[in-house]
Image (tube, rainbow, N blue to C red; front, side):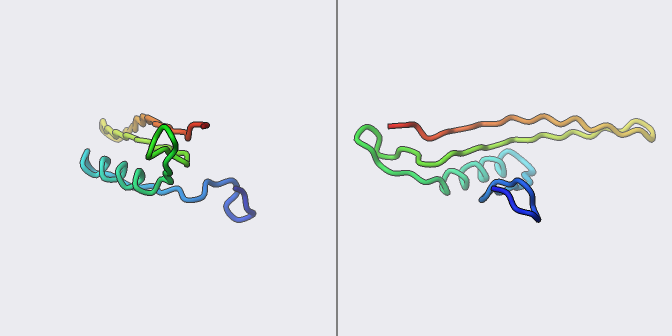
Length: 83
């Protein structure tokens, strides 16, 4: 979607800061519960929505007055299948 105030955006996106693995798993499970699913002839819980789970890890190190931050991202994407 796009509007004058926000520019291009994704509706319904949730961003959460996680402090540990348990927080990240809880965020993943909460997102899974929000997905739209409906049964088909071959799969009783077929997904009807896209899902993107992005895990971003940041590590900041300091030496003297210099600070450096390394950021890594892992994107897990699930698209609904066509049936």
